[in-house]
Length: 298
Ligand code: HSE
Image 1 (tube, rainbow, N blue to C red):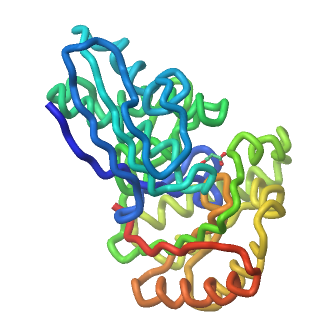
Image 2 (image 1 turned 60 degrees about the vertical axis):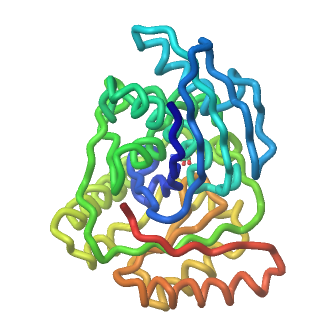
Image 3 (image 1 turned 90 degrees about the vertical axis):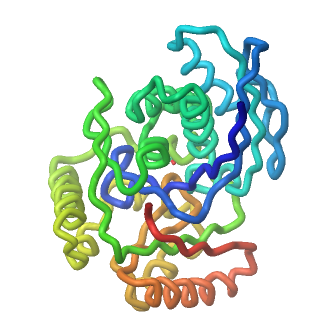
């Protein structure tokens, strides 16, 4: 039994929700072919498009599937082929796509013995391997779709949020690699009460905006007073991209996950395309290679 799947890219944090908010992109992602085999064990048989380890224990898809099989009653084998389109270190959930895609496919081939929420736990093992931290804000939207909130990590409590139909994401990916582990090491471990109040007001506002489809409120809430000031220095032209995106009509703009990708959320495909154009202009001047994706959230 074998299945070919689309493993979606995701945008984590969404400015105000470091490690708790994320959303799933509809048209940006990898392909994977997953097969069940009578030969026990997990094997990564092919990787195209990226220089990633074939060793199961060093591959995020491998460890995620091993976590699933450790909870499965029968002894089975799994062969994994990965066709990467999302670059590692791009900030749009490359490792999450592989981990989440692999466990989703195996679960599907086994006739869904595990709930999507349980799959999030298995996929988090992949994230732990990739960045040293089992954050769920990329794997949860990759598995549940749309927008998700990690309300709690211990115990894990993941909530699927509402996705307003008109939201469109523009993502620019400058072709430099920022390792999530490095981007996490620049973050100070303490926040002030003033910052916390500002931030949790925005998280609440953002989620309320999603459910009431209040696009203005979504826009106002896309603000990060804690992480963005520390991380944006790693991203060339971040402030100029943000200014250009907002002036072109984006509801909000911020760092995608741990960067270097930058996301802008807009209310229509027309605005998302205008945003892409102005961001393109800003980045063309840098001489850096980059690509831009426009995608709905699903
Ligand atoms: N919440 C994580 C971080 C996402 O910002 O480090 C990494 O993609």
